[in-house]
Image (cartoon, rainbow, N blue to C red; front, side, top):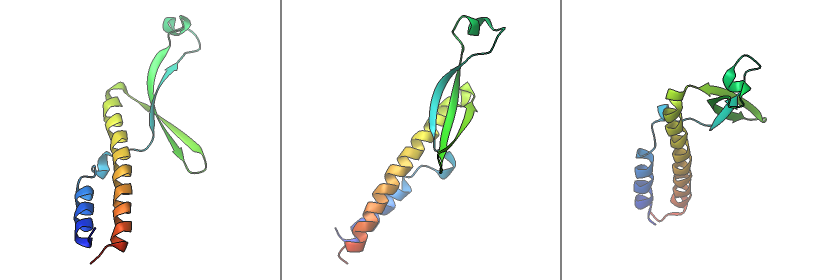
Length: 104
């Protein structure tokens, strides 16, 4: 592949990256919480469904963020954007490797 082709392909991928303002790293989990006492729902074993964003940091530290139900779709979209961002950045890196070997 020629340098010009590699640069054009790289530029095309870069222009299709999701906006950085809508990228989020982590995992979205649905959890069930139970109150200690006084809640009919919890006493029946049903509990309360909640959404949690969990993020792992270097050193194995985890942080969890409670997500309101109306935020769930936005968080899912931002997490998907992060995965797309990672995939496209890997493609760009591979093109940069090719660029180092490409014909002028």
